[in-house]
Length: 101
Image 1 (cartoon, rainbow, N blue to C red):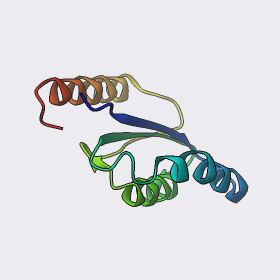
Image 2: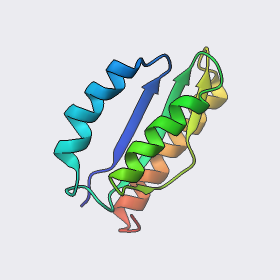
Image 3: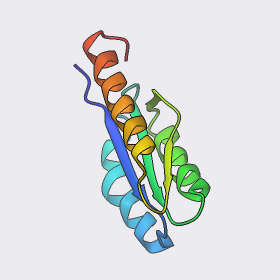
């Protein structure tokens, strides 16, 4: 079974931090994880679009397969957002078990 990549990203990442993440994650994984599924959860102080764009650029380069739209939580996590995240996790697990992803 392919292991999914579930990315949790909090806003406010500085350029140096993103460069370090690329060095530590992207290059070692490049060419080794293509086609694997991923889901994205962003905890944001504002709207999260910058974080979504940054992560999607990286996973596009890794040629990962998006299995759902990103879930963006702005400020405090609300009960309906927890439910959306639980649904995301359950759907991803079910898709993996069924061989869909």
